Image (cartoon, rainbow, N blue to C red; front, side):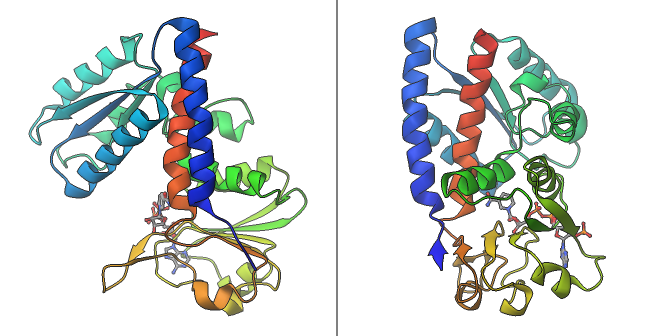
Length: 282
Ligand code: NDP
């Protein structure tokens, strides 16, 4: 078994980005900029936003944080995003989800121009991914592909099974694997013979949000197992969707939780921002 170290890889990527942001600043006399919009006071969202702002600083990206009160109107939120869409110093816009219930998230996200949609969530960017056109890809699946690339794990021609089909992880991940010439099966809560489907995978990616769901009987000897899940155990510690201790005995490669896909997500967000800035200047 070989461990795929997401923490180390993410640190390497962040160091590379620091050089790119410095070069951008030298060349264009402007900093790469990310606007982060946080509405309300969801404690988890506050932590995520704080971490993203800190990661931006470390990578030489200027962040513009906008905190709106819980009771902000749709119109006020839309006005802010429209202003950020026009702002030349803002190369990426991130609206932290979930939004307070009275707001229409889809309508608000549509205000982000696709070239500044650094989460890769908008219909245009998903469409580009489906059509294999250049666009911005959602950070978590992109992080998985980057791990596979940097560990030189080939997926072309391999049988890949995506466990989960959410818009932010499963679907874009399945498209990326397909675009990389894997033979892709997508499993979800209605899938029959789930164990057999997973056990055929050369590359198994789990993103369902259920602690220890993937047992060793679901994993082929020598498979590559990527665990996207983040679950909190009763004792407060984090674990993935994979029963790591048992599955690691069968897998050739495996990602741990924490320290696997998680750190890559934020590294890919920063990558998307730097790419967006460079594209905007080209
Ligand atoms: P969602 O809840 O949006 O989607 C879960 C998916 O899993 C759905 O497609 C669902 O199927 C499927 N599923 C649920 N239960 C089963 C089951 N018993 N058998 C088969 N399929 C099942 O979750 P997300 O995609 O947003 O997140 C998944 C996990 O990844 C979570 O733990 C989340 O915390 C983590 N995550 C980690 C990130 C990171 O940076 N590492 C980033 C984003 C998420 P159906 O569609 O049929 O309901």
